[in-house]
Image (cartoon, rainbow, N blue to C red; front, top):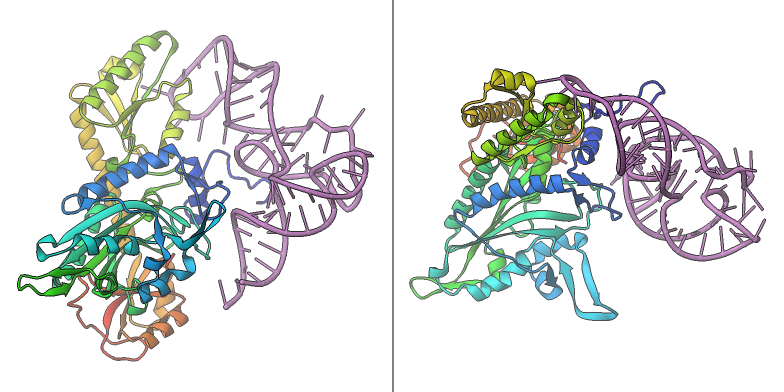
Length: 481
RNA sequence: GGGGUAGUAGGGUAGCCUGGUCCAUCCUAGAGCGUUUGGGACGCUUUGACGGCGGUUCGAAUCCGCCCUACCCCA
């Protein structure tokens, strides 16, 4: 940086410089500390971890409606891991191996799970006997390890994924499993709706599906720099794994059949999207649902009325906590302005100020994190706070949705693709052939994400392929993280 | 995978080539005391570092080797 061009200290890099903004935000807002001395591993600060807890509370709430949570071991014996050929091929280059216990070499090396199919399915083979055991729907929230060789990035590309929610379901028929994949997408849509994160769903091309799947649906969003981030996937596994791991059930006619399976996952990339889409030049912005502190009360103290003001602020906090808000009062010995900046950096949705003027007028001054100021009467404050917060949440969701819509461009010719990718996603007509997809990628600098669908099927033909002119299907292209 | 640059206190930098008065410096960094408080307060006092391991040397932030980590460029 040129001398004299320094940023005023105390401010973030502008969000328009997304990469720098993101890196600095992570520690300034106390989400992740990137200084842990192992590549690709990062530390959750308490505030980041508190956000994680709220986000995963919502995810669990949704999952618990028709899944049960369980927990499988981190270590997977090589003998199990190496059973499914496609799966091995997809992961073998990024597996960490435990080969010693103390000084002794292990007879069978143990893999640190990169994903848990091969830990879970041997047990499913024991658990499942008959059609009465189906469907089986289980999930777990665990860490997973992948030896990433590309550039690692906190919350986005990790060697330890700390927060992998993976669901694994088993069904009697292919169609039932297909229906489960479709439902997984509706669960994820609901989850991201609650985070106010807009998403777009597509079916990944066959060469980009999960290793060992019949097909893969993926949930993407557009980051502020225009690149796409995959923030959820759902896979129809068919009988690939049930054949390998001998997951058989006896159907109503007494016949032994291979089970049909699905799996689907979400990781802390959800939190990367959450903070990236909503944040601004002052810090992160959290939807009330996931804010560890929803309301921060800042007493504005003047010397001679100090006790009175603090008492009023404290009773305000008590009252609002009774209304089930997550409330904190900031009575540190700092100037009010310093506290405003502090809590704005950390994303608190609503700030209530109470000072001599407010007390005398019987009001509280309210400022939402997006800068809307209002004066609320002190009586029935709980109701007013609820309305203020829900209005804020709606604005946040709508703003993010509009930016996403602006980032998606429908194009019909090759030359239109690069400018569309600059902004975000291009919707192009594509025939489905790999050769054409490779040419598209090569000539536009983007990747084919997949065909637009929420269900994996019933895709309509529309237009003709940009490369070969054959009948085409609307397809997403983007620059993927 | 290949190449390059760098790592000095909580953060930002100087010093390194030419080894020694090096107790370096700045900040919304930390600690203490006091005065303050409606958008980043001020004064005084004070704490703290040379990425890790090994080597050369009477003496290493500085020279040499290996390792780790970060960033950039190319595949």
